[in-house]
Length: 302
Length: 302
Image (tube, rainbow over all chains, first blue to last red; front, side):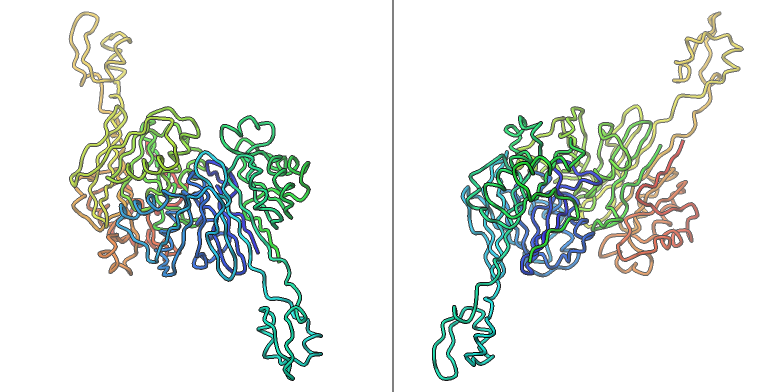
């Protein structure tokens, strides 16, 4: 699992402060999460192969999370993409994109498939052999979801001494690591548990932007490998959180601590703050393994 | 008059190839012409004061000419702008912008006034004490206008020896330079022509992007100080012009030569060309005073 931060600042894009966008590579499945203005230029800069992106997840319809989408979709057409593209987003985005295409007399060179999100409960919205994706219902000024990405565990680990001692034909190894029982050459059935052990735990990633402090999400993201949680403000501006429906770095730290995640990444910083190390410092008081997001930063897990 | 190029490349934005956007300062009136994705970041980079922009002109509704507009309008609101903003654009843009605002539950903090362009003949669309703006009907794959900006001439030039010899009171000087006749202290009426001479010719700017080769525009832009004309292709790809409704550098040169403009600026280069000096070279065969546009380049006329 590899997460690349393309932008992690709130509101207006500036030369060195790009709005929210991330690329997640999970078992080889490349996913774009949010798509602020300028995302396509960031993707090029970080040498992400456009054609490998098959799913785009949009958390909510504030501009700093989706204004770059129409440009990216247009570029896909200019590059003559033919592969299906799936967009998972709240109601309204399909209408916006289709109106823009219609007025430009444009069409996409590829099937563009919208999956409308409208539930206020966690939902499984994608499952394939590489991963599952669930919505994490958040509370913001407009309808908003976070997303929980869970890698499918890999093959079971073959206990090579055991299979060799039992003289099991090598042709069966592929099915054994998939969990199948097997017969020895003399016809004895051997249970899979005797021949394999559990694979390494599969990594998971929870993306939570934007939201007020919402401990209700803790059970769903419990034990997540990596948690990205917005921290628009520091505690000095906590009084703004209720009105703007955002969180502080300390609140993000509390969520990480309660959920027992492995690592917390902070982002969506308000433009009023120049020294981002203060966010790390504030969250660290409640949760040790924390880092601030930064354009171009990569988080990698085996 | 000062023209700043913010972007001059066609189609998809890349790290060093920004789509069309320009800022024109004409007698202190600051105007944004087209607004491709990322324009607001370019405006910041070139230290253009956002609040000074009161008019935005959009040539046509292909993404590389307007995808940056919704982000800029949102940023104006985040900066608490209160001054009116006028957008002159083809039918459809108002619907797109209003849908995006509605779906984000957003509104502008300032009056946003759309002026819909739909004529296929040149039209005077703005006149104030600083300048006039006319549409230049172009031919492209969608409804498209260029724009002709003409500075209003300054005050008439006072012939200081004459007014002093005639012993005219200094209090009249302000009205004399505005073209008024005046009486001497002994009551003789003096015609303005005896006291002043014509002001310096006022500069003008014609923006023509995107279009096929269209000599019909020559009479309208005749004698223009500065002409920006698209040159998406070099002659080697002239066969693409008819299908895509674009021009070559040579064709842009012919328009400049026939119109007898002072200077030609080329832009809207296709991404297939790496060496932009070839555009200048090709146009120079028919028109000497030519330059290629470049992000950050400034053209200044007194």
